[in-house]
Image (tube, rainbow, N blue to C red):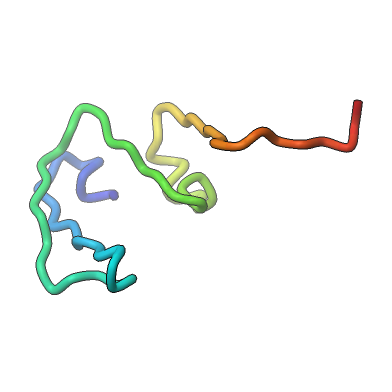
Length: 68
């Protein structure tokens, strides 16, 4: 992510959801204006958080709380 943040070209691994593993090939990306980082731990790593200008978290299911 730091490479993309510094506006350099990056080789990003391609993930196979069928095989549950990275493939041998990559895709090249160039510094985008907007970079979306997704995943359950996307906002967990402090090093990643420091690079972000904006953070948005979403939930696909209602959150149930014991507090009323």
